[in-house]
Length: 496
Image 1 (tube, rainbow, N blue to C red):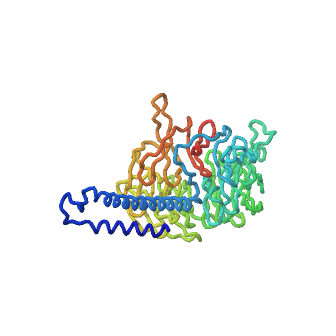
Image 2: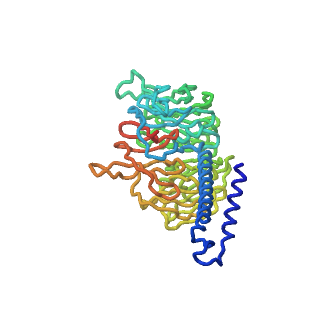
Image 3: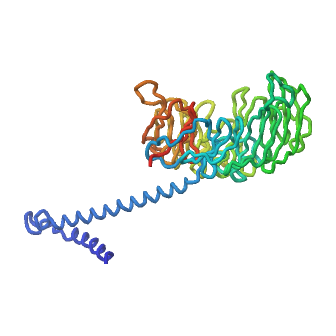
C-alpha cells in the first residue's frame, strides 16, 4: 500500500496549493496566515521537504553509481593507485632494495643489492629470490619496437608472453686478478628470462665482457659487449625460447677505450662504431655495406598508447633537437612531428584524447593522436611535463613552477596551483587526486619533502604528509605509493 499513499501525498500537495482562497479577508478562517491555515502550510512544507529528500537521495545514488563506474573503468589502468581518501602511512620498508622493477601476481618485484625479490605488496614478506649482481629488468620485447621499455609501467601493464621479464646483470669470475683484462678473463654479463610469478629463471645467456648496448628486434634482443677494451661481441637472442640466432666477434683492437661504442639500427642493418664502423645484417649477423650514417648522438624513446598506437621520439643530442613519429598498431607511420610529445605518467583516459606538444618557441598544442591535427593550443603555457590524464583532465607541470589542470577537450584552464620545484613522482593518481612531491612545511630543521594530494578536477589540496627523509623519487607500483630513499624503499598505503 505504500505506492497509493505516495500518490495521495502528491495529490494533496497540488490540492492545497490550488485551494488557497486569495480573496479571503485578512484574519478570517480562510486566511492561510491564521491558525486554521497553518496545518495546510505545514503540510505543504513537509511534502516539499520529503520531495527534496527524495531528490537528494537520487542524487546521492547517482553520485555513488558514477563513482563506482569511474572506479570500474579505472581498475585496470597501469600505474593507477589504490584509493587514497586520506594521507598514506608507512606499511613496510626494505633496506636492501634500490628499485621497484614491476608487479606480478600481486607481488612487487624489487631490485636488491644481490638480485631480485618477489615481495608481497601488502606485508612485504618475501616469496622468491633470484640471485645476481646489478640486475635490471625490462619487458620481453615485441615485434615493431625500436627501444626497450625499462620502466615499472612496462612490467605492470602485462607484457606479452605473460609475466616474463628480461633481466640483465654482471658476472665476476672468482679467480679474477687485479688488472687482468685479457679476453674472457674479466667481468662478464648475464641475460635471463625470468617468470616473475614464481621467480623462475626460464632461460639464461652468459656473455663475455661488459654490456654496452641493447636493443629489441622483431621480438628478439640484440646485445653488444666490450671485452678487455679491445673486442666487440654481438649476439641476437630469442628470450622466449632461449635460442641464439647468431653471434659476431670483431677483430681485436676494433674497440678504442677513449671513444666508446655507438650502436644504431636502421632498415634491418645494425651499425656499430668504435670509432671504426661495421654494419651487420640483423637477420644473419653477417657484415654488409654500411648504410648512410644517422646523427651519431641520438637516442630513442617509445611509449605505447592504450589503443596500440606507438609514439616514438628521437633525441638528437648534437644540436639538442627532437622529433616524433606516431605509428599505428601495425607499425605503419601515421604522421611525424619535429618536436617531442609530453606524455603523461599515467593515462587513465582510454580514448587517448590528445597528445601534448611543447613548442621550442614556447606554448603547447594538443593534437589528435590519430591524425596529428591540432585540437587546441595554449601559447602562454610552457609545459615542462605532463603528469596525469584522468577523467577528461590533463595535469601539467609548467616550467614556471605551476601545476595546471586542463580540459583535454578544449584546453580550458580548470585550475592552477603554484608548486615550485617538484620531486619526480612519475604520474601518481588514484583517479580522484594527483600526488606531487613538494617542499615540506616543517618549521624545524630541513623541511624535507611533502607528498601532497591535489583534487584532479579542482586543484584543491586534499591532504599532505611528510615523505621519509632523503626521498629521491616517488612512484606507484601495484597500486601502492613507493618512496625510493637513500636507505632503501618505503611502501605507503591508505590507513585502514
